Length: 278
Image: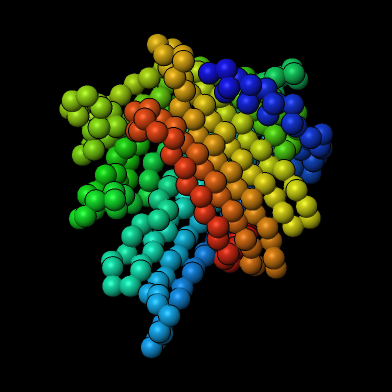
């Protein structure tokens, strides 16, 4: 826990001064939608040095619809990723499978911090499998498990490139078939309710003219076990090569004791097409 508190302190001191919301965006709804597609393919014919045909692809959608008013700020976001790969004669395997929805309503009182309420939804897009076993068993599906969290507290958003909030949260976990996520001991209950403290920090920092770092750090702990934290550290470095082609490096770290006693890590490097629809 001390390490986490220290990390949050270092993070809070790393904010860079930047401008506030431009007057041109005040009292207006601002939509944005970025779609991306990445593919990696290799094929062999009469190749004597070894190797096998392979293909992998990933789809990305990142939608925002925000309102910046004098008294109220409402931020809505939906981020979805889905990817598959195939090597040789094997069947396709899922490599990316994530859906994150977030709504944050902030009341601007002119204080150093502002009160907020939020709602977030975390789940997967489609079926997930454990490919370490053969045959691979299904271990998750859309909203099985699904995590819904409501939080009320205070947010600090005086810098446009770093926003942090802290509050009291209620987290619901829903399952249907895969009840080990809601009832690890007996796999009977399909619903679990937790109350505790949630901290979320969003970072959007321009490293260079064509390189941007985006991070979302989430921490949640139950009141009954303040020494155990759920941790989600989502990091993306995006480098724009041309108007439509970019390179993305993603590094996601998750620790949720109910899911696994071990820290989960997902890393990816992708070159693909990115298009700003809105």
